[in-house]
Amino acid sequence: PAYAERIYNIGAPRGFWEAGVKMFNEGFYSGVVLRQTEDGVNYIEQIFSIPAVGGLSGSPIIAQDGKVVGMIQAVRLDYPWITFSCDLESMRRIIKAAQNKD
Image (cartoon, rainbow, N blue to C red; front, side, top):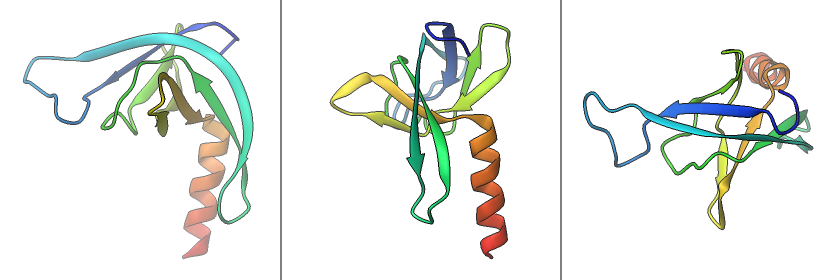
């Protein structure tokens, strides 16, 4: 996504799920930082201003064009409007590295 592009999230926060209710959040793409896994694999972590809580991990982050651009992997409890996600290419590399480890 482009900087300040509006993005969306659909998920079911832990402790709140009712049949027929679809939780919809929106925010903005804020940029990236470079991170590293415990195994030394570099990846790009995207930052979004999506309100998120526990239970939304793994839910999709969707750009304005309808394409999935990431998935929620972490939130900051001290900044509840900050959400983190790997970019898709980094996510693919991390999964591949984990598969090759077995």
